[in-house]
Image 1 (cartoon, rainbow, N blue to C red):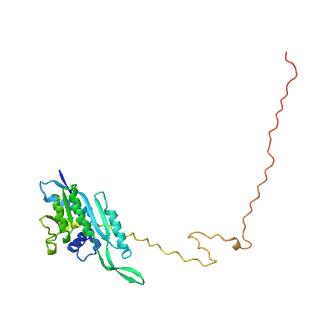
Image 2: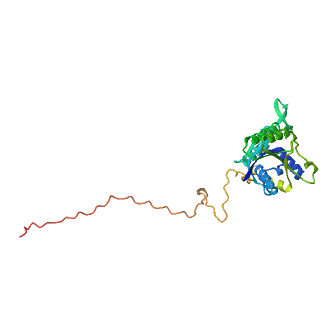
Image 3: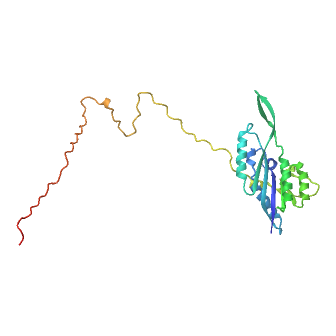
Length: 278
């Protein structure tokens, strides 16, 4: 017997808290979390600690993430779309929701202010999906991957549906900011994942476009009236205008004779004796 587990991921929250905990000061793209790897790692940790309990298997992963506007950051949009395509599978759904901005007018054009962008509606989608999974009866365990305390009411509602509801968080014993977690009206289980688990979940694929090949520049055009230099080891053939007088000239080829009339074979004439036979 196995227990079917569904995982709801607040991606930006999971991504940023992991980067701040285990890779502080490093470029943010180095801490990308692969959703399927993360869910499988969570199941592995739970199965390691649950001695004698039914095995936990991942049957669904729902990911929600904000995406910037193309007019603000086209490279980030391209990477987000490429990551969405790479992470999707039969088990994993990835939903991108546009970030919200404040705008300014520049030369009559409405321009988004990058410093003001923020996620809007992602936490609501996480809450709705968590409750939907709990009510469906398709899963034995539903897990929320987020430290957002605004999701506490969704956890309360999910537990009232009768499905076991849990959370998961990053934990570093040397970092006091990783202590505690979301508090709901009733106690519930939270699985802590450490540095080794974080490294096992990283998406190390590069989502940058391939570099264009650096071809050498074309040779400059030759001046008019010049000829291409001969290849090494070859003697250039002089043009007809360069043949000097008195030099040996090639013998002309004699014309071929015209064909005559076709030959006919001589006729064979046979004589027959006129003497009657006896």
